Length: 307
Image (cartoon, rainbow, N blue to C red; front, side):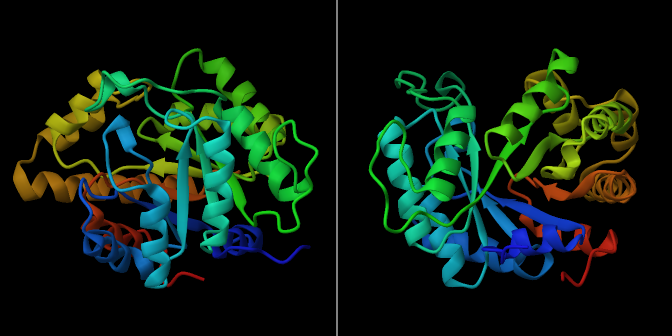
């Protein structure tokens, strides 16, 4: 077995149940915001994702925020979207991320700019997420750029991953898409938030049937719900999100802090069920500007200390 180049890779390849969380960079240039969030997540996670202008809203760059996390000993997973860069910039940034010591890269398409705060902006999508995965994988494994014979002396060192949404339509196509991403080089997968465990179980059954869980490490996404209103918003307004009515009703019985506490309990119960599901290698906690809840969730789920 090759030596792992990142802590996340080490944990996953050891067979331990991995924990990652999400850190949203600020809509400003204050480095302390990133560092504060990073220190909050440091001891309860194996790596921390840094979103790349999530939901097409301008924020501090993912690579810069990832470097800030490294400065305080937190391992980042830099996210990179195809929306804002052409192939030249994407490959350049992959090199830059590696040079800064960033060792995990999540390749994404990115939310369309019309949903963000710059709807008049021009998107790029020169290449899609599959092509980005292939490009970065070829850079890492072959030291080659897209359609270029130049041989790098120092290829980037990156553990490459991708995202998948098991709940988007058509459902049957999701495993095909996952298989393509793995074939293009994804070595770990982080999924959309899992609220509908029954449907996610069907997705994982298809994954196991094709043996994909043996080719890439699959981390199931989870999100603590703060209120019934938040749950309804995700159900009605976020594309590809599946929030069962019984879950909303359970949170709706509570108000304020009690609703948040119930949301955390649901999240913990979900993690415990995911942990028993064959093929699930870990969880990715997307707390959505509620990073303070993550240490409590990880502890309640029995996932401390981290390996």
